[in-house]
Image (cartoon, rainbow, N blue to C red; front, side, top):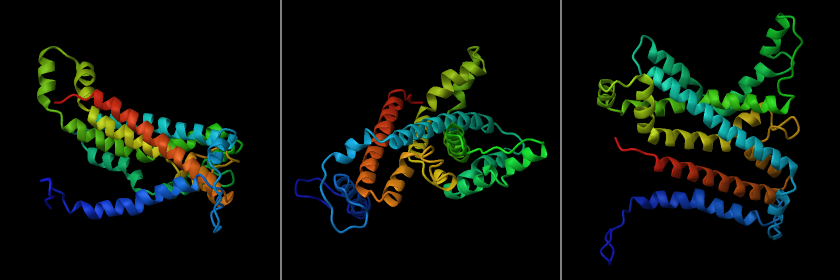
Length: 290
């Protein structure tokens, strides 16, 4: 449609714009409003409390634990997902017998819902009758409560997230590798470059766009990790393994503190936007056109 000033507008954008307003902008606005109230989640009355919910975060030890865990889940998962994803992509980019089977095997966990994955792993690590403790029993060892220690539990959750979504990074990196012209490697080989120099000076710079996509996706996924934690530990023992996402759920449904939960949600949203923006900016400065 052409406007009076000569510019045009595509009417096909309108349905998408309406959906964004209804399902993104409006809920976000409501969440910001609730964050400044003491709403309990079900009452018809909301009292404005200003920035009290945000100030309460400064002295909430459980929130600090959840924030640290969230950073571990986010940055720890993203690091290993991209490391293993890149290594697998380089390995599987070469043609060998059965490479399609290996690709499928690596990508298969992505197709399992995170909530289901948590329940599956629970039957491996539970104290009574868990698969790992059954194996320890056969070896004459005492059973181990895998999820009783905070750091071990956080490590297990991070490992599950890495294992489940490394396949996504692998696919992204393979797409990036296959877009690189072989002429670059041929020219470098003629100049005497070995495989390591080709990888470091040609492959890495030219897959920066793929790396940007993979890193940011993995970071966002890790920073908002919820389903695996909820099904595996429910944030326990105590509040030891909560992420910000699961702690939001805990404060809303268990503590019936919807205002405080919304405030944490706003901080989580800002954290993810800032982290994603910083990494996007960093990678955009290092992109090289092929």
